[in-house]
Length: 502
Image (cartoon, rainbow, N blue to C red):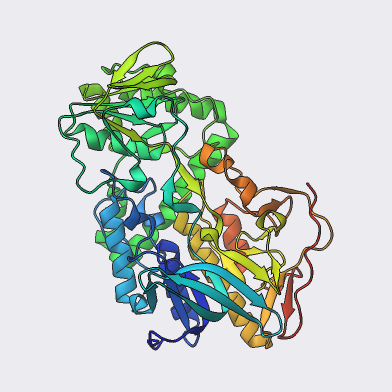
C-alpha cells in the first residue's frame, strides 16, 4: 500500500486510535484489502494506547502474550506474562515492520463525525492542539479502535479528609516519572489488577506497602513463563510454535472460564485452596482478605505473576487490610474499625473511568446519535449508524482475540461491498428488541458508566458475544449478508432508528 502525503484528507477508512486495536486493524486492511486507503488518527503523540500511557511500576498484561498478541505477529519473548515496556515494544515493532507507522497522524483528536447518506461519506472534525487548529477529513468508513477507557483521567472516589493528608497522593494512570517511593510507607487503595501489580513492584524498595481494600478480588498465581510455549517455539519455529501455543492457551482459557461459570462453588473452593497454600506464613487471612462476595468471573480474575503478591505478603514487606476508609488524617488513613494506617505515599488504584468511542459525537444525516438508543450488532457496529465499526475485546479472555476477529469481519464486509457495488451498509432493527447492558460485567468501573454506552439485545446478532468459538463461527465463517444488514447506495438515506424495549 502506498504511503499517503501528510495533507491528504480523504480515505476509505479512518481508524481512531493507534493502540493495539488500531495497529491490528491497519494490518488487516493492508493484508486483505491493499487497494484501500487509510489513516490512523491518534490524539496522543505516541503509538501504544494503554501501553504507552500507563507508566506505573510493574505494569503488565494479565493475559498471556500468546493470546494477547496478534494472530499474525508471533510473540517471541521468553515471558508469557510480559511487562508494559515489552508489550509497547511489540506493538511498535508491528507498526514499523508493516509500514503502519507511516499512516499514523499524531496529535489528531477526533471530536465529531457526521454521516451523509447523500454522499455515503463521513465528515470528521479533528482537533490538533499542538497546532492550535482544527481539520476536516472525510472517509467512507470510520473504525473506532480507542477501547473504552477514558485516557485523560482515572476514577477517584470521594475520600473524606483528603485535604488534611500531608503526604503524597497519586493515581496510577498519572504516575509521575520522577516519583521515588524507596524507603517510604505506601498505602495502595484498591484490590483490582492494578493494585495486585503495584504492590509487589513497590514492595521491592518501599519501607512497607499496604494494600487497602474495601472488598477482596480473586487472585491467582500464574507463572510468567510458559515452558510448553517456549518448547514449541524451539521445536517448530517462531510462527508455527506461536500458533500452537496460542491454540493451547485459548483452549485453557475457555476451560477455566467454563468450569468457573458452571461450577462456581467448586471454583471458589479451588481458588481458596491455592490462596491458602500461597499465604502459609503470611499475616493475611484467606477467609477475610481473599474471599470475594461474588462468583469467579463475575469480575475478571487478577493474575499474580510467579505469585509475586503472595511472596511479598509472606516476606512481610507487604500486607493486606480489608476495611473501609473513615477519613484521611495528617499522617495516613483512619479506618472504620478505628485502626490507622500511617503513610507517606497513597496510591489510589481505584479503577478507571469509561468513555464510549473516545467521546466522539456522532451524527447521521444531521440527527444526533444517542448511544443508549442504539444496539450493538455482532459487537462491532451500531444499529442505524452506517459504515461505522468499533472494537471491544473480551472481558473473560485476551482482548486481542476479539479484535483480530472483528478486523477479519470488517475486511470481509468491505470486500462484499466492493463485490456488490454498494456504497454503505447499516444494521437495521426489525421491530422492537428487548435490550440489556452492552457489557455483562459486574466490575464497579463498568457499572458506573453503562448508561452512556450502546445496548445489547437478547438475541443474535444483537448480542456482544464473549465466546471465542462463537465469534469464530459468526465473524470469521458466518455469512456477511445475514438479512440484518441493509445495503445502501449514495443518496439513499439511512432509516430512522427503531424503538427499543426497556
